[in-house]
Amino acid sequence: MIITRATEYAIRAVLYMSRFPTGDIVLKKDICRTQDVTPAFLTKIFQPMIKEGIIGSQRGVGGGFYLKKEPKHITLYDIFEIQEDPLYLNKCLIEEGNCARDTYCPVHSAWENVREKMIDQLRLYDFARLAAEEKENIQKRIQTRNNCAQD
Image (cartoon, rainbow, N blue to C red):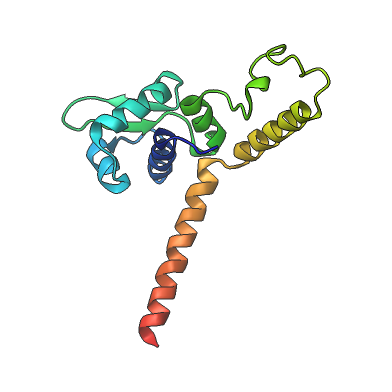
């Protein structure tokens, strides 16, 4: 399973927006420039997140997007679920009775268990945590570069 490009860009854009105070408008052009995404594609991937109340939009000259929820209340799974629909590793998980073997097949139970654990893991990563980790990683990278330059 590989996430779609839309999900990848949505996650990157929300992570970028998590650097700003909740409710502050982040210019569309800045999101596009820093995340290397076209304005049309950004608008497309943000539409379902606007509908779900994670992101708000502001039209006009100073227009852009803003987080409607605190980053600590937005998880990777939230974005994944909005962009990808529910996580199904196999079609036997989509609907009970979809597979004639689902009542006795041990693989069905295995897929179900893996699915639940994956969702749990995606829910552990909120955007406040991810933004803090990104900031720390950038600082380490700068420090490493500075140390190399001094050697």
